[in-house]
Image (cartoon, rainbow, N blue to C red; front, side, top):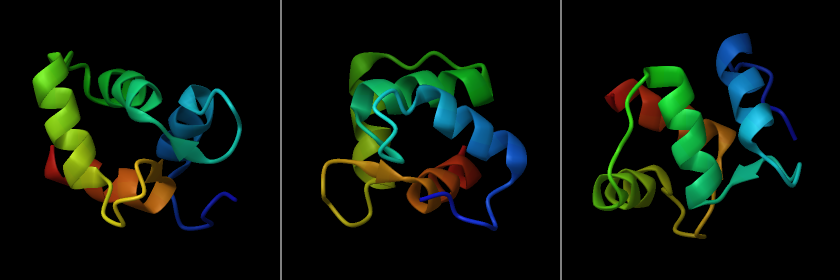
Length: 74
């Protein structure tokens, strides 16, 4: 489900990289979205570290609100 308060650009990129349309990003999807929005290519270790910080609820996936929170840190 799309969060109504997400900025349109963030929501669009999130949806573009959510390849299975479950509105959750796995680490691979997350990395592509972060790179697209920030222009930064992270090495594997940095990506996994950022993913773990973004995955606030610890379910192994990043939701749109978690993704937005992570982007604020970059």
